[in-house]
Amino acid sequence: MTTPPKGPAAARAAVAVGLCFSCRWKRAIVNRRGSVFFRCARAEADARFARYPPLPVRSCPGYEEAMLFVVLMHYARPLAEVDGVRAEHLVHLERLAAQGTVLAWARRDPPTGGVLVIAAPDRATLERALALDPYVTTGVATPEIVEFSPTNVRMSLGGA
Image 1 (tube, rainbow, N blue to C red):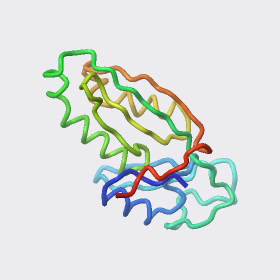
Image 2: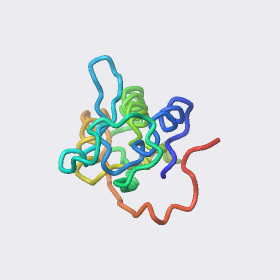
Image 3: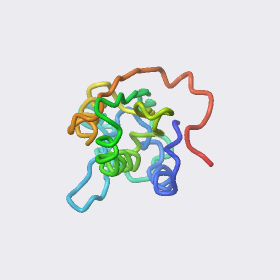
Image 4: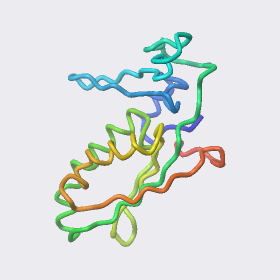
């Protein structure tokens, strides 16, 4: 199971949700109040799975690790313009981290862009999430997506 991102809220969410937090079939649903619910997409085609399983899920015959991606954000505008949108961008990343999507992020040094490590069921889902990022919607940065297999992860991405 992929460990969730650093931060106490994300760590508590991973423990409270269990396997669903890093499952390929998880769909995080956010209501108008900002509460996050975890729906099992396997339930759409297989009656053995509950649409909204009782949490935390500790074992599941349908569990599959989500795909991992590295997203390189390339700044397309001067740093001052990027910094003008940075707070909104960080709120977006925190929201995705609480849903178990964003595992880690940092600004590159020198600040020519950023690096995101993301778990998502597939590339299309990731592209939809990136399309809502304030950096992308304002045109201050463009994402470059690199996919890799989670079977080769040798360490936790969370922790201290």
